[in-house]
Amino acid sequence: MDDPFKKLDPKKRAYIIEVAMKEFASYGYADASTNRIVKEAGIGKGMLFYYFKTKEQLYLYLLDYGLTQIETAFLDQIDLSVTDFIKRMQQIAKKKMILFKAHPHLMAFLGTFMLKENQQLNVPTTIQERYQKLIIEGYQKMYQQIDRSLFKADMDADKAMQLIEWSINGYQQMLTARLKAEDFATLDLSSYWDEFYQYLAVLKQAYYKE
Amino acid sequence: MDDPFKKLDPKKRAYIIEVAMKEFASYGYADASTNRIVKEAGIGKGMLFYYFKTKEQLYLYLLDYGLTQIETAFLDQIDLSVTDFIKRMQQIAKKKMILFKAHPHLMAFLGTFMLKENQQLNVPTTIQERYQKLIIEGYQKMYQQIDRSLFKADMDADKAMQLIEWSINGYQQMLTARLKAEDFATLDLSSYWDEFYQYLAVLKQAYYKE
DNA sequence: GCACAGTCGACCAGAGTGGTCAATTTTTCA
DNA sequence: TGAAAAATTGACCACTCTGGTCGACTGTGC
Image 1 (cartoon, chains in turn cyan, blue, purple, red):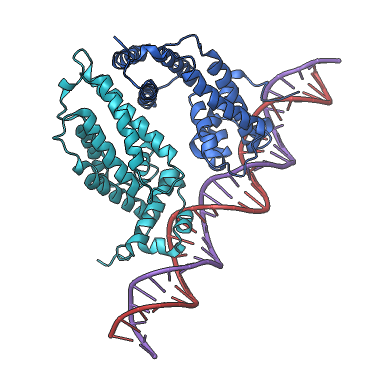
Image 2 (image 1 turned 90 degrees about the vertical axis):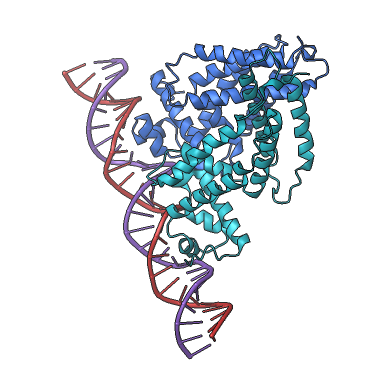
């Protein structure tokens, strides 16, 4: 096949992908504007429809691309041999952050995909299945093969894990909100890892045995 | 003053307010559609512009109304004599849920107000000041006059409080997502309070002294 | 000099925008 | 009862923006 988009300079291609994901994530499929995308991406209107024939095919391309990213750069990377729940969540948070640095709008884009009512959009069942599978697998990678003996003896371990997950989500949301303005590509996250580990230490102190 | 909107049947008036808040919360000021609002509210197009002269004045009315609601039905209700942080958060969560049941889109509406860039909208400084004050006061009502001696002796109480706040936010987000489809007006929340209290008990066990 | 992939943006018909207003119904009250 | 007043409607307006097209143009390779 001779796909002009594949032959594009990788930096430019990645930028177009990022811009388009941001647009769809912000406005949903129906209200996303191809005019804004080409303007922001710095390409002529014609090019977008030269690369992708329609708005719908652009969207489906992004969906496929995004799912592949999450599958390979996130889910497949999680080491289930880590049975300490907090360490497991730490691992997951790290992978998530790395993925977020590479594709800041990927999570929001996929997040709004099933959420917003599927306006007249014909999503292939293969993609829908991949999405469903991703949700389930993500859940399993969090809670499978966890050593519950680490938790305090008289504590409800399921509720404890849920609370820890919410805590870490809270930290991540706070962090991304705080860094919203900054340039993620050039950002050094190491100072934030220190802060994160301090929170993890408190969590350990709170939920684990001495 | 003879304001036709004030003279409306309270149920109808409340419904129009709710519909409009939902529209602005979903799309932001610029992309919100007055056509969709009147259609959803079940009134003729002319009425909206009879009650409020312009889209902007409708928005400003909702802003003022929403701020008043939060001030009186939420902030003013918080009892600072409760010095137990978890009990304080429990109290806040309860007030928040009651307000949410009455105005399901109020929080989202006000949340997107400062977030989205203020597109060409001329918001009076009085309203901006009230909004700023609300943020600050909300923060104070959470953390002021808290008895830190309840936390485990060797624990960073600030981080612990932050983690508890994130945990409770997580629970609330999960709950509102779970109940999204259901009808809030006729919903009985009491069974969910049981579940909530169980989580609070685990939090207490985790962060407080024996 | 010619073929051809890449690139652009003016342009299209159609949909949707906030807002208006003449016409109609409903309410008020002497 | 009847007329003045208030409430309500939706067709309509000028305008903006939509996804998508296409003829013109550029650069490259041979």
